[in-house]
Length: 317
Ligand SMILES: [Zn+2]
Image 1 (cartoon, helix red, strand yellow):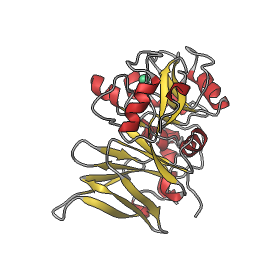
Image 2: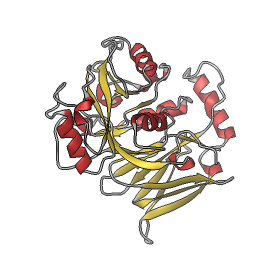
Image 3: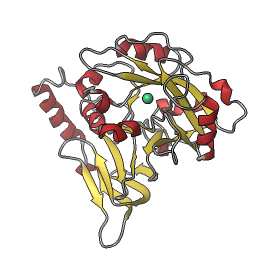
């Protein structure tokens, strides 16, 4: 089986649970690296990333704990008229620049083997068109708990769909953006990696071998020649987001919640429908030239009780 980027169920490895956006006393968080790491360890996390504002905290302070702690930062950027935009940078050892264009930050992060994500685009007012221009972007934060709590602008799956529609495939990310310890972790990633260490985890995430969740589980995503199959924990609704007008949903009915679906591929997007869509984008000046676009699908699980899980965009064979 050859691994398909974006689909953790197409590759081998173990599952590791991680919280990847966290602040400590090194910036505006309330706890030390070791306090926060210990709390996450006690709440079932296998790894965390510390992402203080514009500074990389010393994660060696968590040594001796049974949780992998990866250094990172959330770096402020200056981006046209957009305000408060930041690049969530996973797996870096130093902040080389801040307050410059996000493209420069992205290159700084990639150079260190890190993963650059745009933090909470909806909260920051970063519209999709700006992100379409970025080279080397690994993903965007599609669920940010702090944003959800602050003003209901924590969700950015729409931005991911916008990017997917013009053939810019990046990954989503669900995070706590934690500053204070609470009752329990609320949003995290489930990563399929060879081992629970910095290199293996970042390598897996770079290829999109994870899904994001606030609780619900995605158990399998597979393709036959003509069908896509999804298995999940009990869902009220399973959404298959592809292109406008082609996205589909399967809902719970009198037989009970949805735990398994099987959908004909031709109903969610064929190369023909993508070609027609590409022509429309060119007409609307969203694309300048015909581009060989491969249809992708993004799976969203809604448990009907406020819990969601989100796959990354996966190419439809
Ligand atoms: Zn933050």
